[in-house]
Image (cartoon, rainbow, N blue to C red; front, side, top):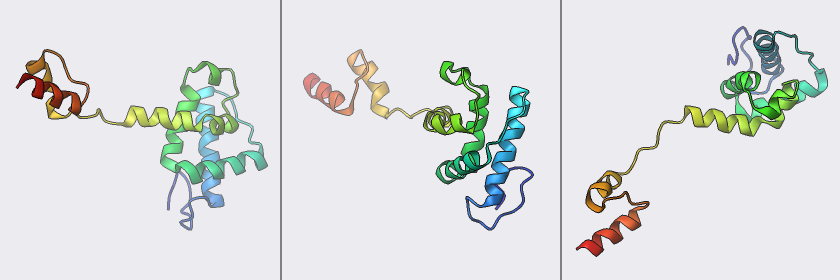
Length: 137
């Protein structure tokens, strides 16, 4: 399975040494491109954290999270080195942020538009809509 660009195929295990190495290489490459500085890899700590991130989020989501971490203007992140340790600390926030931007708009139920015409204002729930219909009948 190929997780990142320029990585070698692995045994299929999502957290193999090759996958972790490919993630570290991707992180260092993106750090250099976006921050214009080299990232110092703290080998035992960063490798363990990278393995845990890969197990939790998978390669595709993690690559998007790295880009977000390195480019976002959040005050708390901006005051840090934006390293792998910060990626771990802000992983849930970044994953949520990524999911919100990738999620399609929710589809309104058909009764929502009807309420504005029938009642003069939109109902907040299906229950409210049914109660208004009973009252008007």
